[in-house]
Length: 252
Image (cartoon, rainbow, N blue to C red; front, side, top):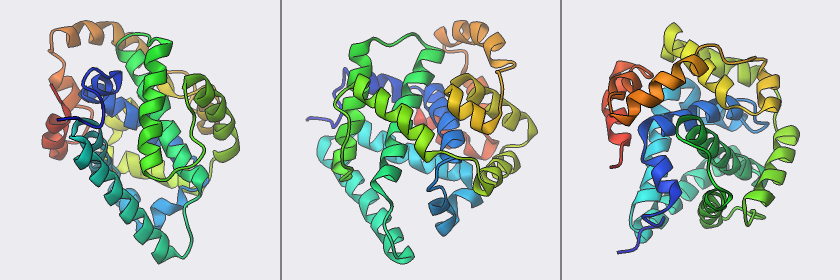
């Protein structure tokens, strides 16, 4: 039985690891709050109303695509397409190709930066594989003009974060929602993880500055996670009511 993503793929290693996946979405939460098309989130109101719950819903879809048999994965992508079409129809216009690209490229960037922060540097071959895998998902979503490899993606992404990101009232409101739903300690931790992951341009737009505690904690944390003693630390990153969803993220 063929899965959508090969079993030996670095993408599966990245997305099977709970803390790396949470870091991916911590970074993406910052960058997407700056996107020119972030107003789409407010049309349905689901993400501003329940940002943590929507995070786990998105993770579930992403992991379903990455880990399931090819036919099931494609079916999940088609379901996402249908959901987007319904939202577009209700609003009366389409999400731009740039908007779809931005989300896809964001997931590529934070897959790479999160893995490298917590594990090790990736080879160029592994980075190419990540780009090709997400480009394949993008083609199933009918996204146009996708990169063929890492070097092409890197150039496109660098231009798009300058062209398509800006701080707005939506940005400020989303960060208020993050704080409201996470609480003070977890929000502080979120910001510091974001400082450790974001590109210089994205960081400057949010004026987050340098990371404070994450670099100091990483040396100890990396040693702890080698012996799988870090599960309780992972659970501290999100509110207790999401414990089940956090545990379901791990794919051995």
